[in-house]
Length: 78
Image (tube, rainbow, N blue to C red; front, side):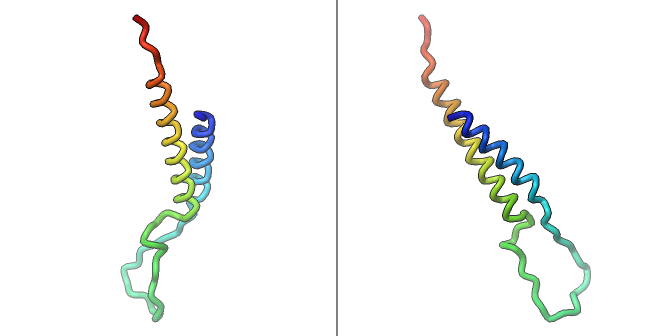
């Protein structure tokens, strides 16, 4: 089970790293068109990066669960 969490973290980081192509800019003047800019849900992070970070977070949760389970199962020697 820890291997699954580790794989999820690695794959999530690779996906998040490879999808950093969100372009945005700032203009100090009003554009000369009548169209209104509507952003992508108010975030500057692409959907692929969001997916990669979500998979990374899920993998970290699996690793934390496995670590807690391993610590809880240790037997105390007397």
